[in-house]
Image 1 (tube, rainbow, N blue to C red):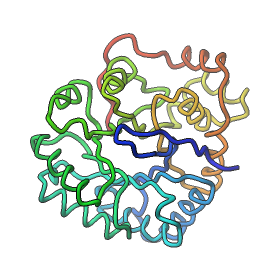
Image 2 (tube, one colour):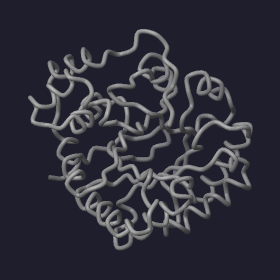
Image 3 (cartoon, rainbow, N blue to C red):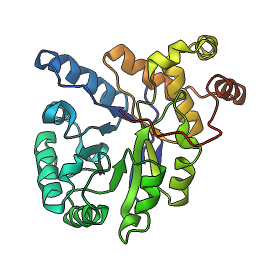
Length: 282
């Protein structure tokens, strides 16, 4: 079973996979590296092409692990996203952080580079740094992460805000707050949404109605959550997996599809928001 291979076109014109693979918490134990590399390569072999990471993950070791895992794969077939700390958001610091990530990942460029969360550096300075990286070819697209509705709205008037292609935020069936105001606002500015923690199995399993829908569909609650994302198309999910079997289950779920009736039942189990909800962040 191959993973969903559909793509979208970002505002900048860059083509991006709808489905990604998250890497948070990888490389935290050197003894687990071989197994984690094997799982990541299995995901690549099943068609996962978007790999999401950050300089923060594993204090930089996650990017190094990914660099090892990607050896032997055609770079042009991959889409690599990394994120930089807010305290690296001054242009000179962004350049240095980007160079470190490129060395660790073993690549000449990043497809997408994100400001990990809002910080103290004025966004106009960060945007100028991003413009320089785009001009140099070190990155192909730029975006932000963990910006709530007010924060997102506040930067859209900046001169270079048009270069912002995505906002990566926490979003899953149990955490739908962004549907009320943030997602519509992002849509107005043609900014795509990447969903981190798109599954959150603990919350999926705790909802009896959701687990019943999953069982009837022949899916695990986690797999149903991913199918929900792919069916709605609101966001680009980046699930993670710790075993090859889990990767295979995610690949199958990504192409499973949901009926209108199933989607309506999920809405009943996890109702869409009817008022503003604070942005969930981890």
